[in-house]
Image (cartoon, helix red, strand yellow):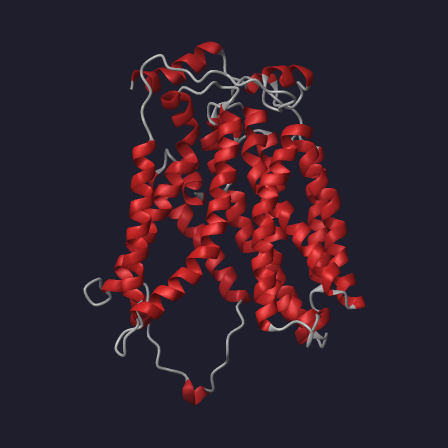
Length: 425
């Protein structure tokens, strides 16, 4: 998604379309290599090295590494399908299903929540299922990986085929009757009561990403995800090191599973609450309560309270999941529904960047603290204070969000021309 966004910026320069993403990718690879702590080999143990050998590590022969080739191809197709779903769901709802513009954001929001919940639930089910299947197919000469992938692929094929047959293109002129709602954030009535941040008009995707509102929401998502993913990535070693001798490895694994459940619950609860109180206020709660909870984590470790630590971490993760599930509706409130899918796709670059920044910050600061003699149990304190600081910055970014300037909205003629190609199909 990040690559697509960058390529679009240089659509008039074919060389830049290829080179700029390569330079950006190379920068993050070098950043990862610079922060990676690796074992230093003795001079006698170092293997011979050549530029040709180094270049060969970026190539594989599909005939000799058939399993890797199939794994790469299947992963590529899966990610491609996910990108199509994320980007074009708004167009499908409006132009194929016939959803009303005022209802599309709510439907996208529900779809995002359900998709996120299913993803988390599937991860909890898929790993044990794969383990059981490998044990079932294991033989003295094989661990059963190939058979397991085939079985799970068939399950996936049946599920996706069944889902595909449920879709039907509605007849011409079909529209979804508007439901009767009370106090919903996306109705015309609610927009009349709360005009500043909820619009029934539309901003073109090529204009939306240049507005201050897009930049602020990018920062909001980046900061919220960076803080949350820092906890998720280090949850197991963190609780074991902060409560050494009291929390076993199996208990830490259970703690990680518990956080996944709270992640799922947060996507339902916080996003539903945002329909009642608004998106900006919901994120205001995240960035007000979040720093207090992050400061609570080292305090819980200092007083030796496992219950307080688990409770604070669980609440933090609910806001991580809730923030991710609420952002599509936040975008539709500000920019309208016509291009919300494409705008959301560009905003997901913040998620990608946070996926790098969060773990790098946590790991680097922790290693730095330990190398300078700080006990492992206290190595996370500075990190938690830093995460609290990031959320404070996010609070002011969210506070600065205002309605989109009038000049950025599309006119009725522009909107009609934009919809004409889709209506022709």
